Image (cartoon, rainbow, N blue to C red; front, side, top):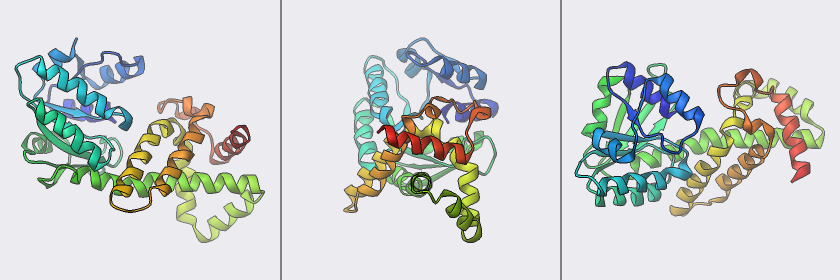
Length: 281
């Protein structure tokens, strides 16, 4: 997602930079292809940037913010920092406190939709006291929608939305695997085609591309679980979704990169792999 956002901003006339210290070769190649310039250190990064968009695996969001805080405390600069990751409102507030203490402007942000390659399909929700640095990106290819001054609102809408989309993906994955192990896979598929044709089509089209994303979705499901528990609801539904993504992550299919679409399994092949994997757990 991050390199796609950067590519859109670059194509619309902005200079986009990053610091790839410690990042993988794949990330370096994607950044170069997107026109994102790598700077040598985080000190240079914070000195050159006006607005930082943190877009990464949810589990790494807090450490990434701390790295920026450390760099800010060593320099005499000001900037805005937007956490765009799929994390709980209470998590983003803690990150915001760190960023504020380091002297930067904090923006709570979330992304709903696919990478923003096609106009009109992706929304960036934002909340916080000073949203102007992010709202300006409406002029550079993004669809930015403010929710208010309270930090946590942007993250909250992402948590609720993703509980449906990725939570449903996990549920579909689990029930199809169960049907396979129970010997009713063909009969269930036939029934779905008769009575749930739209949902089954979604399963066929969407589930085979899920395994490369499963490992980073574990943390997102845990953040949603924590969000729901925070407001007095059961955390167990989305904690179960995290367990399903752990199951997928233990298979060889999770080692595929999103670019290796020609190697993605069919729905039948995916379910078969997962059914066998449960025997190993």
